[in-house]
Image 1: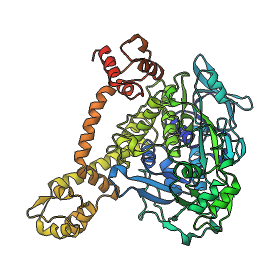
Image 2 (image 1 turned 90 degrees about the vertical axis):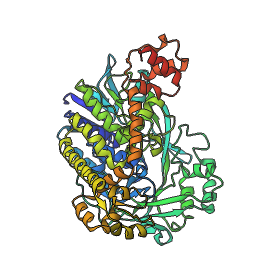
Image 3 (image 1 turned 120 degrees about the vertical axis):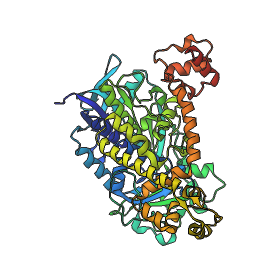
Image 4 (image 1 turned 135 degrees about the vertical axis):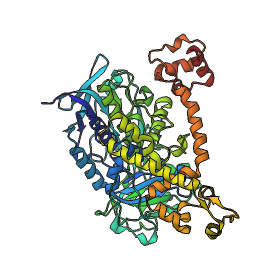
Length: 621
């Protein structure tokens, strides 16, 4: 009935979709197995993509020929660039998406791919022989052969949903939990744990008094996530901001005795940076108000998402509290918020390729690794899909360094440090964030996609080369073109910058903090005519390269120093217990994680600088 597939992907959430596309774009025959074809690429939580650091990840996925950025651009209803008041390393794109259109577009793109087949059924087990995965077993007992398997089960592994004192099995509201895989993996020697996440109530937008809230419009003109020519966003829909108050908090407290979080029924740890509303009230008791974002679910629906009001309290308590929020006095609720507990596998059991140590050609991606967020999941799926394809072809895995991508930081953190709570990416986690900006993701990563042979990378690479040439031309012009005081001083005065008394290069003028390329272009007609040949994205890239040149060079020097350790390889089979000079903790951690390089070893929790020196001495360095 089934052919033998190169790669089988279990789960069709954000990680599974990207894994399937990546493996298929590597030329593999892929089976995407899902419990429900109608929920492919479902936005289970908020209807948005991107945000602080997450937006950089989406652009990196796009630069590596993934689909998340393209799908977002085709289906977003609002776009904003966050942190514009800070330096460009912090700029983070975010889009409000049309939930139904997002899932529909993903499914259409997947179905259009000739290398992807589908199977709708729960996968309850793996076929493992001699330490290698050989396929999957479905709920009906069908065996499907595959050379590699990527598990992207999300919150479905033994998922339990909590609403007040009620609890029932499920991986998502209205959908069954997945049984069997955790138990088999534990039998094979894997360590598992429990985590918790939650979602807020959905309400009827027709009953919201928006005039009592603060509107939050999108950027004009709107930006994009994809480096391809996706449609320009028109007719943006605003979000709104309101706040909780003391009466809301008092109402919520009436349900605390029935809260599964407070009475011990939920054992798994929840996300530190996205706590439930009851958790916020308990942890920040001194605060009388918390911000809520009122986010539309799409253009053609009245369903609205209450961002910031995640809760597992009884539904009647949630409803009463909502009606005491300004603007929600008459609100009707479509469904209550809930918490969900699920199994995950500590990611220290993985290699940097996301292949498991215990079972060859078995890869984990997404929430099964202890992460939270569509973007974190999608990026892991992309890496797992690429590396599953390369494993099938018996090629070396693609491993992104911390200095190359936020995706590299994410996976390096997971594998070397592990996580005991849902991991979320932040710009502060990346020590080289000046290099890992959202504007240059294609320059950093598309050459890697091209080298890997991903479908579509050739055309993208041509655009990258053109962008590099254009950026160099702009930089050359600014470094060599002089400007006279009479031509520039009026502009300098208008931006509160000191006038110049002598002829200067444009580059030296641009270095002033108050000065921008667009401002110079408006003041200098010849410059405006020259810059008219370039698009806004290229101009922004050139301006950042010129203005932050010193910082960029300093960070590149740090990367070069660190890369010396990254180039020193360690044998996967090395017996660290033979090195008595290593600390006991280091011997244990190194034996378990099996780092590929000295650089990776140095980042493992419990491995100190003295241990690194011992390893270098042993290697003759």
